[in-house]
Length: 135
Length: 388
Image 1 (cartoon, chains in turn orange, brown):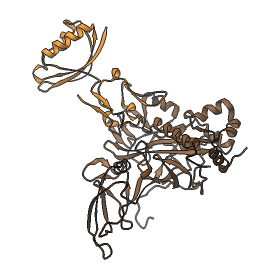
Image 2 (spheres, each protein chain N blue to C red):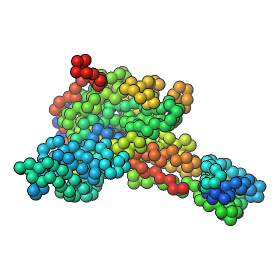
Image 3 (cartoon, rainbow over the protein chains, first blue to last red):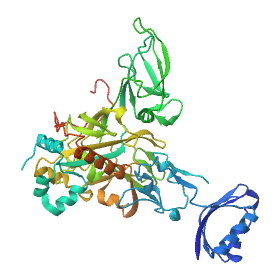
């Protein structure tokens, strides 16, 4: 069983297609929609966590891409500039899932990608502008 | 047995001084007791690394030819106060750029000067017989100017408060981003490492005390603005609110951007992280009683920043131990907490200062004048001349 967090971008024409349903039906995947911004007539974005067989996940990604959905691995798009960061920890107060935290011992900032749901609340909380998201 | 600062300095000279940071002294006292600590330990280093808006630098540019009596000046488009002698200005940390707004300010100018970058100086004057030039545009670096020294009117607040927000909208404050409906809470100071919380009655920290300032050796130059020793205190002497503050001075040219850093609080303004380290001489057992203070022994009031008035309501008190756990309870709701001061960078400063002292690079300076113990904290009332 593997876990993979993906950002799916749906072009406007296919927003109405029931693509996530296919993920269950055809590829036997469990999925958890962490965030979604999908409205007709505009590009939709979805942050989704897939659980299942490695092979099945790869086939599902291929299926989505064939249907013009752009698939990116989530988490890789959050960048913390360690040079700018001073480990104040302000971002940890707005991080709902606890992905950003201060290490108990070193008191330095730790980012746990697996916990991040790309809510972006941290971005403008950083006084050093050290956190950036590229979607 | 009491120790004098002269005796401690002799030990520093001999390379025999025992120096601990304000975190290490806690365990030391726990293990060996107050008496042993007073005998064996000579200095305890305290530190903080926090946004401190009330900071800035005096700069003297040197004279141009023909000379100018600067009346208005801009450094990288950030206005600097020029109502001083011909080529003296004061650049405040929170002043914003006229072209880039909140994205660049006085703190960035200081950061750029420290890192050796070229800064554009623009100045205007009406021109006088002795200073005929009316306009000036040139580039400077810290090496081309005469003096550049930080003079921060209010730094190193003894303690502060916890900020939270009970309203239905996100607030952008100097305490950071406060999420609606008690969505989070932020706090400042380095708690058990904080200079004035380790010397709560200012026995050793006073005017003339030599300190670590932004990576250089600096001094406490005066009591800070809003210095207010008459605050609620716990039996261990620590204050529950802001209380004591210090004004500090040091040579900007010797500073490092690791310990001076520009900050932007979104939709609020520009501020500056200032790194300060203060050595506290272990003069007697009473001093150890203060120095052994732990995060759990220091309390702070939780303040609702959604009330846009001078006096804001309180949700009660918590201690730094609870705050550092990442969660506190407000009105029976679990609320996430986060600091705006860097404890990691503060401990780094305390360690660096310790190294300086142990290697004989830094000697203690006896205060020449105590911080006021009587000052009153006043509010500004809106009055007519007759009502005054």
